[in-house]
Image (cartoon, rainbow, N blue to C red; front, side, top):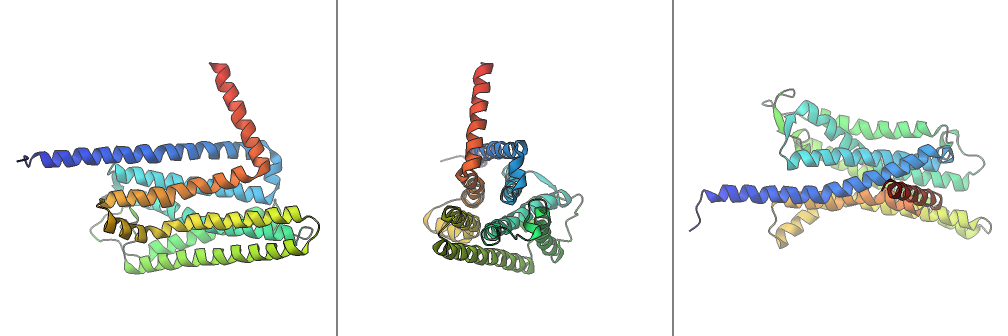
Length: 310
């Protein structure tokens, strides 16, 4: 008969092994993502022609937003894995950045689709705000919209009176500050609204550009590229929407597998948060012919430097 005193030690060792495996799986993906983003941002900073085009400015903005989103989510992931507790006053900024950048992603995709629409239908008479020197107005508007809703969400809730915001250590999870039913309902409504509006915008721009492709006889190639770009934004939106499938996956895993709750949470995080954010900018970046050429040259130069130092 197994000694009962051995069970806690076995459970602890199994949990420690599980945490190590999860960290070793998630962190390399995040590091590769950061390296690729660093290369793209270096290219944009080194070649002025990219920063003079609204499309590339918006893409740079998307890279920065996704980096902040993944950085905040990975920090929260590591804190939960390591059972690191700290005061709510330090937890809220991390949760706020994660939520705001998550909601900002579909807004950026909608804006990038509209930019292609404006470039095709108003090539000579673009509104001033869509020019490369005025695009910051749109970017600031997107930040304002994506930040105002988390502020409202946190404001309508009530914290546990037993918790001291400045001193009580807690495990930094969204449930700490968004546990009330009204907050959950508000968050669900906002997410549905964001993604529904963006889906309509992407569908509208795609259909309009598709119809324009059939009418034009000249410059069909550029219009066709714009149509494929908008279609790509739709695919990126689909990747982002995978984050909302976690209730379904949790139910299926519970029915067909005997997984622990923390294992289910990691599966959802890795498959529906980390991977889509990892793939989305890389697919867009490597698809662009001009950017792909500079990326190849950058990696080639880096490899030559590494060989020269050996």
